[in-house]
Length: 198
Image (cartoon, rainbow, N blue to C red; front, side, top):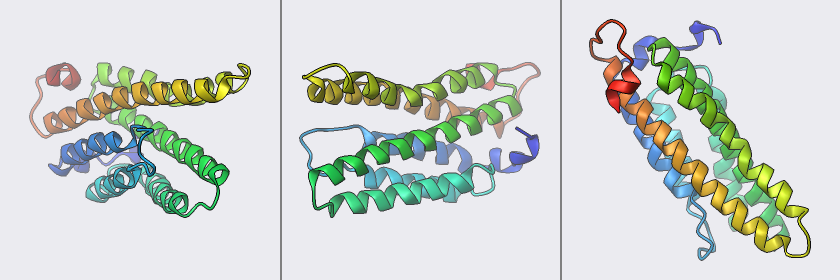
């Protein structure tokens, strides 16, 4: 991506580490808990919007990400009023698709931030974790064609994959927050901020 998409001054601002910390905690509210009738992801979408508002000029990807978060919030409202279980399931799966697209864009943004900071380890981490966003849907497709017991398998594999992916993405947000904090400080030549933050 062109370097013009990244605002380095915003990256060095004190609000940047806070924004990524908020994004990290936002992911907690997407962890699927079957015993709840209504998942608390509404809090996660609101926290995403707050984080984006804190650094609106950081990267061009934040514009589409804001729209995705708003759409995710609208889907939550639709789920609470869904008249049938089938419609609820469709909206629920669409919510995860929106979340994974949101995180795909977030990882792409972090890759560029890491490259600007010469943080090779963080860039590599964002690159491979970005592809994890596709894992839940791959498992869903496999489980859906596994035979007569597929409803249980879909639920188990989908939720397990989501929990693992969310934990890894939370770690990436935490590493990015620490790196952004270090970006506001003077770094010795050749220092990898991601390694320094670890």
